Image (tube, rainbow, N blue to C red; front, side, top):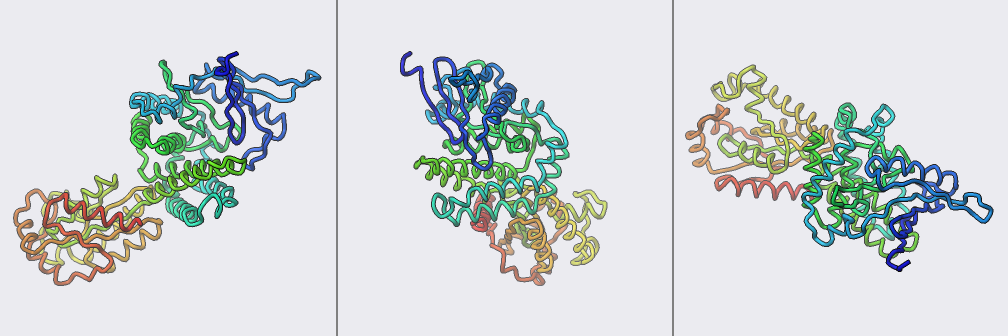
Length: 484
């Protein structure tokens, strides 16, 4: 047999022997804490389970289980027997070579969305999608990684990863409850990586699902697909990662908030951090750099995934509504406007005029207080669902801002405060030229408000006399500064 027909590949838990057109996987007799293959009967049982589970996505690849017999003819170990896949069609290889994969990614997203749609569900499976179950899994990964802190892993990044993970989970119980109630928790794959996907002419083959622990395979379908999105980003193909998630959202009908995408990508990156640490402990010196790279990826997504409560305030005509809408569009957040909420609470259409004197009519202190309380209530609900929320209001009162700050604290969200400002000549002209606005403010009311506005030292000032693009650029720079 030519040497090229034979090859060996090793992971932390198994060895694969490639012989001709077959591949034979042998599980190592190891106890890694999260899996224990030291008993032969366990290896046999798990090998058969691996074949059955992987036939869900690759029925023509997984051929069965073969026994290895000793001199006495009795089984001494077991091999998972597979059809050998062409190495040059491995997705990770194609990505590294810069092959065009847009069509393949779309096809794969469709395959995985269909797989998840037909996957087993049930009360035991659904329970693994709860906020507390996810927290336990995260804590397990952190505990398993602690022996490597200070040696393989730097202390500060890991501490921030743990803190940001806990903050996200602490404020998002409603998000995870809703995912459970909508059937998003499935018996999935659990370990989708580009190394284990082969892009063939008749469609992709997804191999090597997680078989040793059912509970780690019972997960949110978005968590499942996020593993591959994370891996594509690690392979320096972030555009493919975004395409995969966007196509998957379309095919699955799952409009999850961006923050949840970031959370699951980060979680999967830290899972691979732990695996790389184990490989380092087994003698792979290159795995240390790999572990640190995964940890950096996890931290980046956790930072990006923090839900934000963004207050965009300012006097009438300052451009705050324009800036608020642009921020929400750019960040994929929800925008709540005080003018719209005020009229909704009064039972009026948003476009109906309700002009009144300063602090009179619909704009008296009672209506204003009710409006800001409702803004905060709705913001808290959306933040609890993982959304970033932009609140478009004047925010002239320190008490109003304090209430918003309490919402951010209660939901473990990041508070960002922006004050829009333009010269009075500009704001007065804007108010005079307005058409179709839902605001009832006049230049006279703006002057009264300017005389009574409370100082706002915690806000960054966005200068809005220029173009909308200039204002948005300033605002986004301030938001990024809050994130650091």
